[in-house]
Length: 197
Length: 197
DNA sequence: TAAAAGTCTTAAACTAGTTCATTTTTTTTC
DNA sequence: GAAAAAAAATGAACTAGTTTAAGACTTTTA
Image (cartoon, rainbow over all chains, first blue to last red; front, side):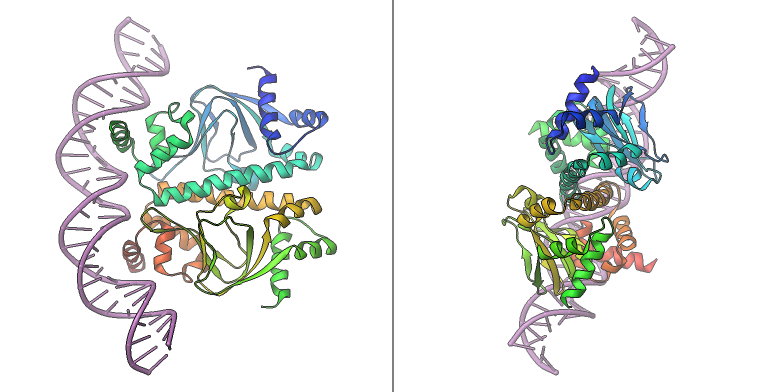
């Protein structure tokens, strides 16, 4: 993937919510850093203070925590045209509880915390962009937190397939289980049951 | 509660993130509507398009959905100094799935969708305010959705008590169960177990 | 391309949480 | 302040999801 392709992708993503002049586009792109992550490599690990937020131009990553027993719980899968990172660590400058690992070779555009602050000073329109981006994420996390406490595992799996048809076949069943919040064994049973019926 | 008290409260809430001039404060307050809700009355019901977002000056409300079986699932309890509503319905102008009911006599300040749009035109600083407000909410919902799939009911109850000590004694056990995501019977068992130990 | 490592499946025994039914306690209402 | 309604407690029978273990299949690596 050339520079150009990832730049087009991120500018289109931003154009959903705000219009930028040519100059603003150039300024914005100049604040970004290109990052490549090989499959199975970490973009970040728990304990670190996250100094970047990322846009995914290509690839797939999983964002997860490990509980007291070392069991992983996946917060999100991030694919092309998604944003990821640990917004809590990024904003509060405190150590993260999250790991972000590439499940495929991935190409990202990152913005540092310093540049994120500069961005709002130089192009205040970005307050609106992030206001709308966070608003949308909020809506989907509110829904997800409700599903977590009100639906059965089978219902959560069916919802996931409906909402993320592109992701469901791109990740392992084990990772899907860690996202749905069940054991891989039970995930296996659910999938064979749902496919049977 | 006088006008003044609720105005002071909401202006302080906003001052956490942005500074307003006297004129801006007046302009902002002029865009708000006072609403009172009696205990057990609805602020809104599923099926309606939500045209207001609310700041709670006094009281306590529960935001919940009903599932296929008519079982309630509480998304949040909103008390003084919190914001509430259905951000999804409010933004997309589509019918809500949520009910909001006062569990105590409550006094709110509401902003209509029309005034919300005017607000950003007249005082663009509010983009920043909402960017930061949504960012914070997002952080706490990301955490909550993780807890829903990774913690036991007892652990979720203990976390809730730690995070919301002011709310835990203000709502019924039944509503707490609907928030934690378990039956009232099992909530009762957990509470007697936790208090015993 | 063989070996190693990881993933998926299946099944039996187990546990966290539900359901249903009944009684006691607290809150609401007239 | 008595009666009615709602909330909380308790217990027995049940079910969704876990644990442990073992074998089959697939992917990665040298």
